[in-house]
Amino acid sequence: MSSIAVIDAFQAAQPSLVDIFQTIDGQSCPYRYNFHLHTCCSDGQLPPEALMEQATMLKLEGLAITDHHSIEGYQAAAQWLQHQPVDQVLPHLWIGVEITARLAQTEVHVLAYGFEAETPALQPYLQGHRVEGELGQAESVINAIHRSGGLAVLAHPVRYRKSPEDLTVAAVALGIDGLETYYCYKSNDPWRPSPVQTRLVQQLAEQYDLLQTCGTDTHGLDIQQRR
Image 1 (cartoon, rainbow, N blue to C red):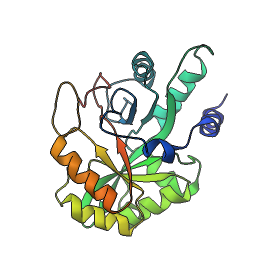
Image 2 (spheres, rainbow, N blue to C red):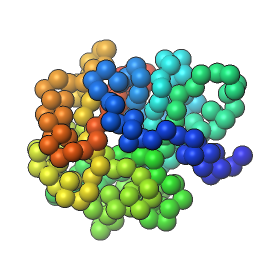
Image 3 (cartoon, one colour):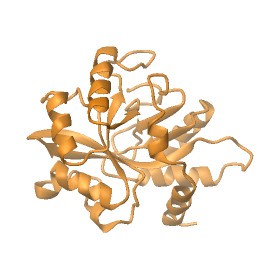
């Protein structure tokens, strides 16, 4: 089966991401869901197959690989799932990508989920590198994600030079769908959402009626850690 056919098959079989995001809370990650993971297909260390082996061993219910400007890791993970025994309990895998963009004169990262990978509008953002100029503006990025049928989420809102309040207002004006609420801003072991930042982002998400997501932002060898 081709990688495109694998993607189509998985997309058709997926539960609604909106429904899943509406259930996410502080206990969801990293033991039930993880929507921010990197592989060696961008700046992570884990091969996609090894990442999926960990996710299966940990009995995750669902995850998304969100490599920077690439879905190669997702494609490899989808192929891996296709070759597992039919009676094995496996996590749901959603398509994802992390896109660098300019929002309110600030460099931010936008996470895209559940999109149609072959949509022409999204192609500039899936070539393995950041996009400059007008296409690199958050408005263009969010529009492209929506035109591909996906959801746009502002990653780790408290990590940027501009305040999360200002960035959220700007992102809402452009149609952002959600915020990455549950995120570890320090290298804690075990991984856990940073309480002060989490409360702030929760309040912003509730104020603007946004979806809330969670993820470890793993770049290392353990998907339950950031590094």
